[in-house]
Length: 376
Ligand SMILES: C[S@@+](CC[C@H](N)C(=O)[O-])C[C@H]1O[C@@H](n2cnc3c(N)ncnc32)[C@H](O)[C@@H]1O
Image 1 (cartoon, rainbow, N blue to C red):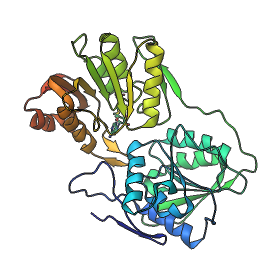
Image 2 (tube, rainbow, N blue to C red):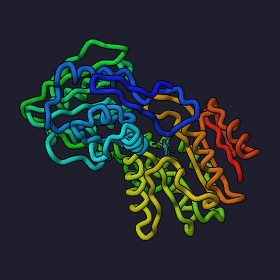
Image 3 (spheres, protein in one colour):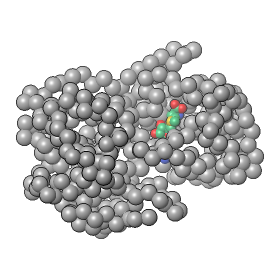
């Protein structure tokens, strides 16, 4: 796989996380290349300018713009770790980038803001809302993305929160969006987090903007909730890829003596899960980890892992993260420990589960979903 990005700012070695044998995907896309070429040709960024990069996929933008010591805001732990890895791989000092997460923004004003349009519109809206406070009438804001990822709603949100927009020509199916900022910024109320009541409970569930199925209970998750282990003797239980944490909440309710661990690579997911757990169980501790699944967990340390795996990473659809989660679970589960997984029927997770664990049973299935269990 090609790992050398060649742009006017220089040549940089770039890798994506999680690392995979025989990786077929690059750590950047045509949108990154287009934006970097445009910035250089038009000398958009002056020396000493304060630069903010939003949603850099794996650090391509921050690495190429390291001279300007950008602030990079992302909701993805994997993106941030990739950025650090790629700074090191190019022998760039880590202090040349200031990494911030999606709930911990910089507070000073920005001269140039570069937005890689995220997959989730709600995240874009949350970011545009937060961005208003950092802009001055002289700030330059450019959004970039692959044309297919920039629906009419993206343009509408940019206009609502920032000002009028104009498109660049498309190049290699990527496009830039230029903005003319409103002279007076509109301060709407941030619509996020959003809340709903979890059916059959009195739990009010908080969902930050980038959370999976933030507006209502996902139908797959609903099915999983109906088939969770209850009152088992599991002591250490993981909600893997927890999102807003409702799977872990129900597990905690049905295992009053167990320790719950909520894990997600999204800062907004873990913040939502923490808020939801603490509201329901005000005197109970739990662990909340922003991480690449169970990568940092000890072998043979967990009794039960429950997982509704992700089927994409950013814009790339696939079962590679799910497969990594299954392998991690096998390592981390105690002997006799259980992994319970839900998936769309067509994803056929039982093939990998059976190969890894030697057996795999169906707990329940409906037209769309199957719930499998495997034991170590
Ligand atoms: C299909 S959602 C399930 C969310 C929640 N458990 C539910 O059922 O509503 C998958 C979750 O996995 C998270 N995720 C993706 N990659 C991850 C990784 N490498 N490590 C941990 N979590 C990850 C996503 O952020 C997302 O919240």
